[in-house]
Length: 537
Image 1 (cartoon, one colour):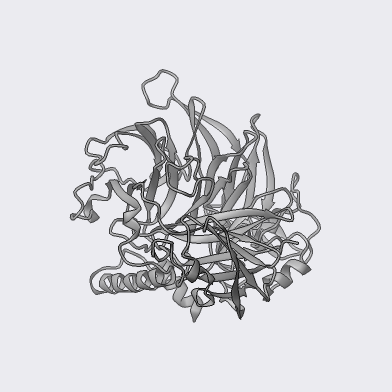
Image 2 (image 1 turned 90 degrees about the vertical axis):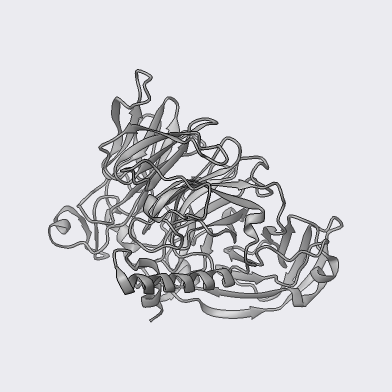
């Protein structure tokens, strides 16, 4: 029943009409109310710190109340599927129709004189865009492509194949995402699993008879393309890996979305020979170049911590995003490299959210050689499903939107918005760090010592998920945990919590509604969710 309700909220189609469309609007409004309540958000406060500026959106559904709202030119459906920064005036976007456009004037406030120039066309569903050197790179269904303008007229006249070789059967879900760049100059691409393969599609797939799984070549894998064009399969087990990005250390991560074998949305550290969760990706396990070998059995229907112990190559995510509480469909990954121009969260990751038309925030740390960390709500109220994020030269964040026919919150079907820090610092939990005895909470402002020391200011529980072949998982093995304050730092920015009964590979959910800043402010977002893969010694 839970899976059915989740599917309804996630996949209710927008082509319904009349009374059913009004029902859909009511359902989404209810989902929005539940989401805001679970995020611990007071109405109308995020705008005080991060303004949303609409650059362009679908004309038919534009919010007429916004004086800054500018439609794209007639006939241009700006369903943003890729986004990259060119300079301090221009950005480039790819759209699902198969085109790349250069937009000028996008930093203006309000953006009243945005211009559009088509750079490339006739691409097959590009789902990413990257400026590298004098070229743009995009991943199409069947290849990674370099787009070059050789005569300076801002129109691509060379379309060069950089890498190819993954399987495409024609299945609707066989998306290819990227590229993103790592610290060594390699390009990364992630490949969606094919879902519900039937008929002649199966004839073009690979069968692993030992595990009885079938997929097209390298489906559900993360691929690295070296500067000389060599494509290397790195890791497997992905379902819908629509977000790729690096952290400040240059390590590569991807996001996945709830579904079969995937309990809820998640963030994973990509590294060689690691398997994440979707078993059908193992159809390619025995292909030349695979770093994964010898898997003969996959556990099914057991809690994730037990599955990890039974299955040596299975690695838990760095961060789980509890379903509904922290979104329903995680998308892009963006590192804040603004050095404070985007507020107090420099060096952290921002994660797009499709269904709830929002953006979440992630703090990561290395414990015993493994990444883990906490996710926090950040900004809701975008005009449509958030698919792509890119940080501008002034630290602001461009947000590429498209719900492409699936339901999402918001008033538009697609478009481009920009998120700008107002200069005011919100009272937030900036970091949540695991310690040997509990967690350290680092705040953006000094705390009120009395509320920080009160056990009534905090509530914590922990839970995990089932690893199984069916769609998603409820939270299981839930336990409430007692919280007490060990100490508050002299500067008032760090509160050390002592917590008994923490469990490895469990999500630890913190609600800190009672704490106040030294100025008496409540937290802008009172919820945090820490994935505790390792307890520090």
